[in-house]
Length: 196
Image 1 (spheres, rainbow, N blue to C red):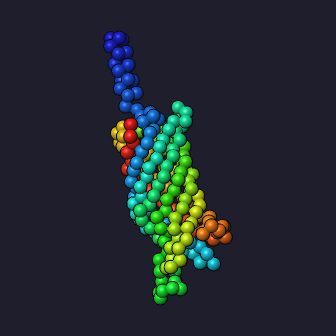
Image 2 (cartoon, helix red, strand yellow):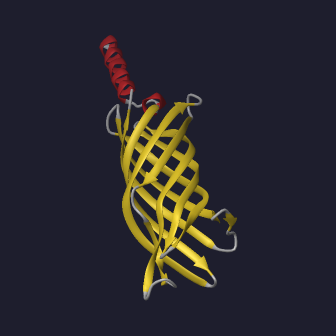
Image 3 (cartoon, rainbow, N blue to C red):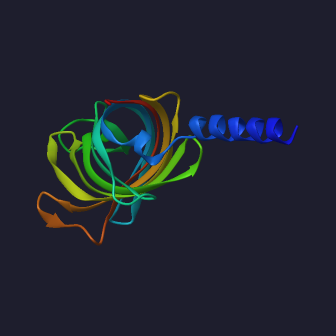
């Protein structure tokens, strides 16, 4: 009876171990698509503008094990849509016009760790860039981003992800804009595929 009980417990332990994800299950090259809900903000000359918009973003990246507990995430993200950041009076057209951050993209570096059997939590920093567009005024924005999120394995090659990211643009047309506030707070939910 004791032998049967020991064998059963050993079998349960093996099945349980086999069903648990390992850090290595999240590693390798990956691609994905994300629904990005953004809240763009612009504050200058005492005025504060903001707007919310949604769009689709594409993701590519690579994840590698740094230690047995920590993964390093490299990523590039490109938003196919424009992020709205309010409406203002335009000098080159009558009436009011939308202000956009056009096609934002980012290059990111992050660190992640398993929090349960199938979930990887991570935090990241990123270089951010977008085109500012307001009537005939167009120039490049550059800055940084801070993000955190989690990935849940659906199977060995597919995961769903949720992420919150804050972007602060610190340069406009090559000049510092520390006195102004140009930012984007973004919630992403998406699907990714890993290549094993």
